[in-house]
Length: 304
Image (spheres, rainbow, N blue to C red):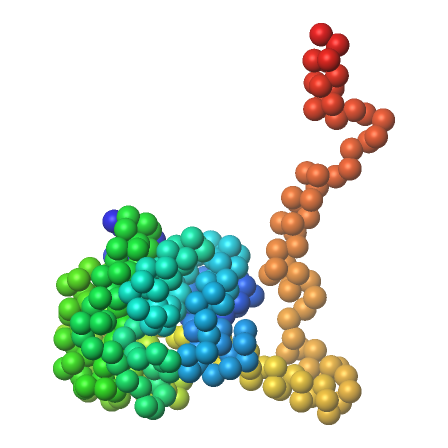
């Protein structure tokens, strides 16, 4: 079936979308005009449990965070489902939980658990048969739901480019909606992935990661439709907090950095205070001397 995310590649040659990790970052992505966003496991692990992306985050923690993010915005949200948190039975449950949470899709990868960030060293992948079993389980779990399955493979690091391309082709043939070959290590590898990977396919742009970061126009020309910047917001936020907190510690006040902060009014508007106030007006206390309509009706029924 056609999904919210399926429609995006059909209406544009390529789409840049950001990683988010909580409701605030998701609201900001929506506010500036992004058409969809991605819940990054790396970023959620860092901000929710304070740990690196090495397989410590649980399915329950990811789905809970995804649910809150999906409820906070209107744009479609794709979620990093890592390896599905176990075997194909775990994948079935993971996809069903994400659908119930309101996610528009997920990434599902082929690393051995516990997995690592795709741009870290020492990654290992499961067998082809195990990987395709998980892909088939995810497809069965999504059924006719509005859900976009991205089949990710990390096999470049544990088998080479040709193995990764084989897995991407097999996953797409099995029914995945898109492919994602993680961490091409050079411009030449990135070019081959863009040319040969089944479409639509993802380019994952991590600043200072293993893959060259290229402009949207160049990636589109190479054959990438979905261009993800999963950690830009996280790194920008961490840097801004570091600078602000250091200045506060040094000066004992924020007087010298006021122009670098969002204002009180701007932040309240971002969070939606005006909309909440409008809703609150509907439920203002009624004059106690004037009976409620429901009370009037009940008394009338009793009299009759």
